[in-house]
Image (spheres, rainbow, N blue to C red):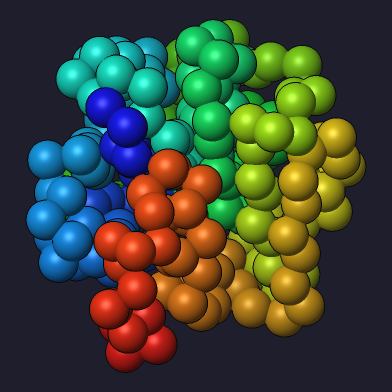
Length: 202
């Protein structure tokens, strides 16, 4: 489906996150809601990848938009399927960081509680791929003020890709709505479709 988008939220996040809701709002206004999927991902990586594979099957060849841990998932899936991916403050090798997160977790949006186990970490490690080398298929949006992840890890890992690095900001990516035209364009949605929307007002 040309112009379709699969949005992949981050760790302990949900479709209720700010970026996801802004994107859903824009696609709804454009009459393109049927070309967007924002699955509520299971906390276990193997389950989450299964959900995302299903969504890819429904959409055909969507643009993968991944935030944080979702960026790690998006990279794995983009490499597996030859898809385009737009990554927002993506996690690099998250399994190397999650040892300190073992134990009880709570989803920030749904209040779901779950247990982070060694199997979660193992499953994340299984998804690791070599650094992408195709700048045509990737855009990587980083903000240097990211308080959760060191943006320099992603800058190094994705150095062969198209990098867009903004000074300041935070892990949630400040000013995301203003960047949505670039995302829609990368997804293959023409400017004539969205020029009437005031992205500053989102």
